[in-house]
Length: 243
Ligand code: GLP
Image (cartoon, rainbow, N blue to C red; front, side, top):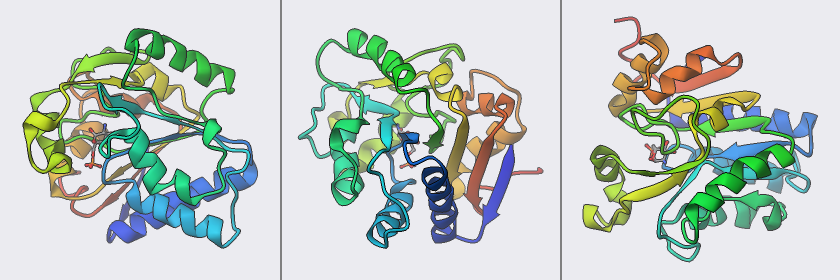
């Protein structure tokens, strides 16, 4: 694992965006896997600027997203499809047909089964970005998820629903109870992974991910075995490391 500890969020997202830009410059038809949550928003803002400045083009890029809430369709402002269109896809030169977000409506078991097959058909993921939940989850893989899991549906932890209630006017009752997510095996098959974490509330999860036992109790701890992972964090998120 490579650790990059930076002074603040804007430095973090600049470093992450440069990794994306290098990937796309070296392989214009890259397959990217993208994340939602508040953490990657600044990365997407930097990528939009790079497209505007003609430093990179998403013309031939394909993207897959990690996860989606069950029951929220693309028009719901808190669906991850809406988030991606709003925060990135509507502002870059990507072909929207080349952007995949698992659908939260329909036959989710079928959708899950087809998702990994679609990633394989695209040639596998070249670069994948992750945030981390305060309980160590990656995508929506909650503690206890088997490391061998493919895309699947699940019940969200109460802690995750509480953490995410801020996006639903602070009302936990509005937060869906279930979701669809790429599995842990679907994630670690990516060739290159970057994980971003900022703030004190992520420090415990970061420490357990980097220095803890590899255990399904901390889903992100599996990243220790991946050959190309970079964790980009601020001093607050790194503050428990070495204790
Ligand atoms: C959600 C997403 C995760 C994300 C996490 C952290 O649960 N499914 O992919 O990493 O939130 O979100 P934030 O970046 O807002 O802290």
